[in-house]
Image 1 (cartoon, rainbow, N blue to C red):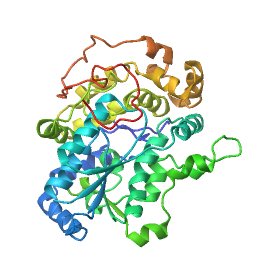
Image 2 (image 1 turned 135 degrees about the vertical axis):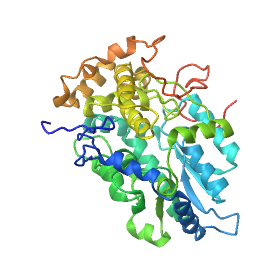
Image 3 (image 1 turned 90 degrees about the vertical axis):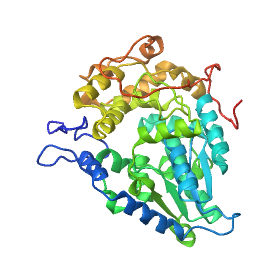
Image 4 (image 1 turned 180 degrees about the vertical axis):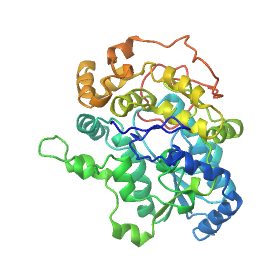
Length: 410
């Protein structure tokens, strides 16, 4: 902790959980890899992508050319737009039901299927098992989101094996976009190891089993990654679009809003109202836990991205981060009800996972009861307008409640 160094350009420091380095000029690896976006020949890289997918294109429309993981938020619209309309592929869409769905997320997912006229498969794991897994990962890892990430990253691979569709097309590689873990020219692909080490906090499904826990093999088997011989028999590979397309989430979302009626919603804990509108917990309790464990929250990720794209100065970004990361996390009571735990029990578990080296940070001193009681109604972020516009609400004029199963929208 005594050797913490801050990037002179963005807001990240060397404590980043994905690993980050600074060069002699004090610029972080994430900022340096981002510079490639302004120097690479993207026309050439697009041509490489077209040549790559040509081998997977089928003349038989009854055969899927690729698998595309989707949700009712994030970059799903842009990915499907690129795959279906620009690459002219026939994708099979797959989605994992996290059970914490917002009405807006259900609406966006239904609209996605309609707009792009694609087949879709949804994985609904037994909710009793999901609740047991969530309690285990909350207690052991300090994470409510393990099952979501595990399901979202394994179901597409399982589907590729089951349907014998070898190509999976993902959006952006998080490690590359945030900390410059790889260069775009490395053309890194999705791997079992990266998923375990970074996405799953080094815990595969079977690692959750213990003599001191109530989880059984029957609870976790659907989160198992296929064996290597199964992957090799089909030739499964997962490519990332951001290796071949200049990735800019804000510009991409605004294109999808204009052309395909993607809808967005404001959050108290970030200025980016385009991402994660499908989940009640990601930008709320999950984000608060991130703050407890790592000393920064998702708004810092968003601010660093906007600095790198030249839309915010470092000072402007700091103002926005300071405001948003002190705002309350909402909808916590929904998760407590869903898990059948009380607020005091949840607070006790979160206190176990607080980073002891960060206890001097004011943002970590408030209690969950403060979040429940607080409201940011009428509060406007000081300083700059980050340029994000919400056009809907998470609840869509419905009562606040998880939509555990949703297939359409009125």
